[in-house]
Length: 285
Length: 298
Image (tube, each protein chain N blue to C red):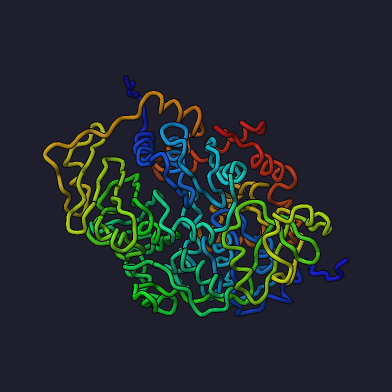
């Protein structure tokens, strides 16, 4: 009998929900340092997906490590089965179609499976110049599933049409993907409110799960495009007591996954607190 | 024994990097950027450069803030968890810095094309992306001459100079890396000239003991420069981590163009050894090295 946790953060809920997307033989890529995604993959690796192959930086199939704010790169490198270059990575994983999951996030996402990490506003006169997409614009097309996570579900993020298409899933339906040599898989977004999925080009995103306490209208009112609302929507499975313990004691004792959920003003203070804990752990400060 | 000697001092970079050059900058995210060379570019006021990066951070932001760039090619520039890159944003949003935003794979494949001496390489590129539309000089839709399949051609990228940071080299220029290599090796193959800063220059006997660690052959290297902690404040995996404390300080200085001038004065416009003193000297270096060593596996 699973014992569900009574006390968990929304970050922990999203983390275990994302971890469930990882299957046991998956090839899972970690892109830019996004603590929530890193924690999810490591949690999956030490629980239900021990045979998954995790990739980060130059490291291939690295041993699961304790996450910290500044040591992810050296941890992955020191525990790697193989170190390779970005070119070898994209030849072997991306272009070969062997990637299963590489969760992305985005400034804007729309009903068509487009993401925008470029600019808000006009391309040549941006109101906000975003970071750019790095690998995201292409991995969302190439990998088996397109998984996105969004810590703040709002109409600012989920817009009818993105200002700039940095990248897109491009081929969505299973038949279309197979015909063109891509493995079929859904577009799935895990947010702080719910899980939504799109599986066909001509069908809208469907609300699959609502997080505990969230109502359908909370999701609909905060999404800038039409959603399919099934007659009955199950609640997102809560984290178990064991998952919460693993996250807090083993995978993420410094609390990096909650960083994205801190309001702007509190972020720097929270960051300094985490860094101090890391110093203490190695006997400084 | 080989007699060639490619060892230079930081100040010798002006013999290779010239005003107006296209400079590919190694490293990725907050790791492995050739920061000592970048500081030296700023000290020598080498301007009008076009920087080429795959995934840049403080390397690009610092060069922009110091006024060294006339153009930027990138797939990603961000200070990651510390926020968006402040000088990068200001320059593009307020001052209209010209740029070419290319997807990460297209930059790497473009560099690989440059290294192979071909004008483009085809791949199953970012169909449907607006970036193809905005920068047709880097992307073309093509048909496979054998099967008719629709493909994207990524244009070759040939930098005038590539600058990277590595762990060690000998004086002939065999370059060893032990951690994240990013797209450094592709940049070295593609570029016309190359400068490498390293943590240490060692006798060739040390290189021969571990040939598997040598990632760049000497004929792809024009100058090696010993610069301990030369990637600071970015990391040199697995030897030291990025300096989160200094990056937080950088973000404070970079909050406005005015205060950023003071960063340049306080940290950049002084000899490299004084920079290393200013960021906390040996004590800070030992903290960063220790953090990189003390990792915990589950």
